[in-house]
Length: 494
Image 1: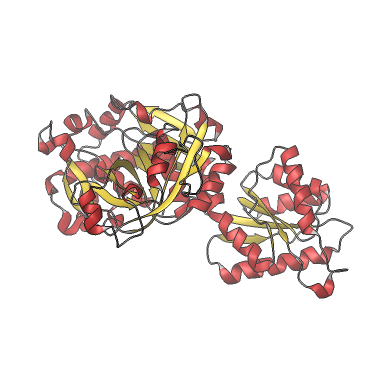
Image 2 (image 1 turned 90 degrees about the vertical axis):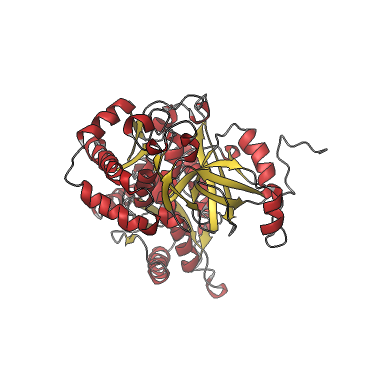
């Protein structure tokens, strides 16, 4: 995937000067060895300069991990730890950071070999709050080398998303379509997150598109599209225009990213797009999203932001779907009841016109956009990618601003069922436990729009930590509660 950061994590061990320093040294070495033995992902760097016991050591360690190119930090309490120096290290490190601590190894060495990091984590957390420092602290942050290595591995996707947000620019084209207030939200919270936004007119985009007419690169892009579509290439006559549009977007990204490293796009796709451009952009959106540049439709800025977070966490293609329609009773009885452990109200169909990457569809065809073609000539609605979404685990989620600029989010893990949709667009039969109650008491009650981001896998743990890290109040990070837990707005007498 392009357009997402690579994490180089610096591990800095700390030590309280009245505790044995070798505890932190040896435990740090064991932690790094355990990590390298069990995980083969982003880079890890063991700070060798010193064990941080003082503010001077903190400055030395900070300089070392910066020189090594670390963009994320793990502060490791090998023993009790110096609460001031260790939290100053976190304060002055610019990237995402986490804290974890060493457990005691054996009952045979609980005098000279006891480190008390279990206690030290309490002081560290208090000092982090005193200094208003955000940090990732695992659910149970004390463990042996293998357990702390697992904590670090859990932190890596969180760190990737946090770092990427701080260097992201969202490029949008056009105002939201008429009757689309649902996806309208203030952009002030984007700046609070460190995200830049460039808002453009769709006329600017149309001008840039026209300037790409006859671009020498178009045949190469068409050939790549033909290869991807294979037998599903049902509208070959529109490929050159789609290739022209893809090049327009990619060139715009290169020319307008400015000082930002990462880019996502919130694009316009109706009502005038089809008649003026002569096609719909769904397939191009799917191709860019599949490479790591999310392109949301209908100028959904927070949908695009959500997709980008999901891309960073999963390192895979995501999609943006309408929480669209209920599953008919006859389909439920024929294909779901007795085969899967879901009530009918746990199921729904997630749909969008054709923006889902081809790799996430069971089969795909380039077709026309059926809804738009009800009112327009078919030939200007070509360019949508249709197919049933692949069965398997998914996470439905969204980060959203309220009208009064407060961030809230939801996360719900579930699956796409291997059930033929018998419908059109990019669509799947989704199942999420207690979806009916979640739909009523989170999505409706808290005024979330109908667009939700979909990651292909269960990523709820990492998403929850990202939302918490960036400052969404935990009471505003909702999830699909089990039947035994009542929502605050749920009628107890139902």
